[in-house]
Length: 441
Image 1 (cartoon, rainbow, N blue to C red):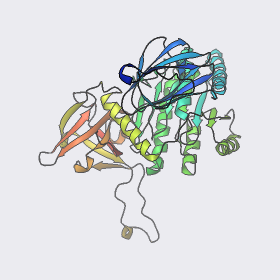
Image 2 (image 1 turned 135 degrees about the vertical axis):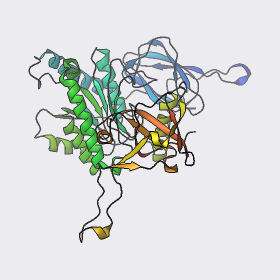
Image 3 (image 1 turned 45 degrees about the horizontal axis):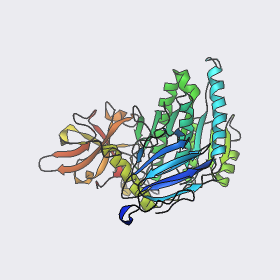
Image 4 (image 1 turned 30 degrees about the vertical axis):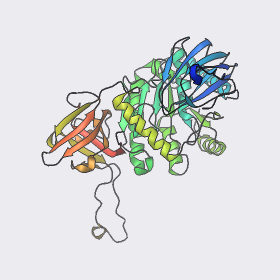
């Protein structure tokens, strides 16, 4: 177990076993970076001073429990003493952080929000608050910066909208989705983004290369839905948005980034730790009015995660959806007849055989074509979205109510068994399937 430079070594306890409670003393503008181990959760509390986790202040003297494998940092502006109980993979104190520049960005956004609120409601351009899009390569701290900016804004009474376009990670809901939700309070350091009323569109894959056109269509659907909500709500309009993006920034990834910036009419582009991307965006966006491209340093606490780690993290996110962060939810196993459900896949579908095409033509799969899927054993261990659509023709343009996980398919009896977050009828009989699998562990 690693102890940070400021973490006091625990004195041996009875029988030579070291007590797991220890303290870390933080100087002003430093942070305690922690990775919770795989075996037991970590309890942590603020003994004295003030400190925050990603923009959310820690309550004094109250023990918080952080789940396994969580990585986070406790930052203090003025100095603090933190007490920990439990083992960690690593914990160390860092005194070089980019927090000053991050909080300066927040101050600029705050000014824009105030001006937007003060401007007359008949001038929709001026009454538009900041629409911030956070971009950068994988593992540059995009979600963390997004959380900070949202929590700081919420602390001042704003209700900014968080938009998550990162289908690989899924900060708002499970991976494979793009989603948006208003943030009314600083984000809970343990529970994460509140899930009262998120607007969720199911893409169904964890990489956009599976169906680039569908990804663009859904980004557009989400943005239009939000524009409609903003149109009647001056408060949301002034509070603006914080948009988190994927870490794929080359080739098609770069095109998708530009598509997202333009579709959401972002007016502040924050580039984390990537000189080249920053200069490319500055160049291509210089003709667009009122778009500021700002390069920011990434935090030293960001750690690169390999593909296996990401796969695991996705699996935990799905598990958390059904069972809760602390295993405190009880999902329900339900059985339905094949005839009660309609399953669709978006995109692909059978291509015309080459022999039926004009000479030289390549068979092309329609990226937004709706293909009915037969219910069979191929659906086992897949996560399906339950659409709000009233009919098949509405599936692409509809957001989703939630997700189910297929645990058994009985071909003989034509019955399908699935796990759902709650008992009772599904909100709709239209289901969408992609390539999102989960092996319940």
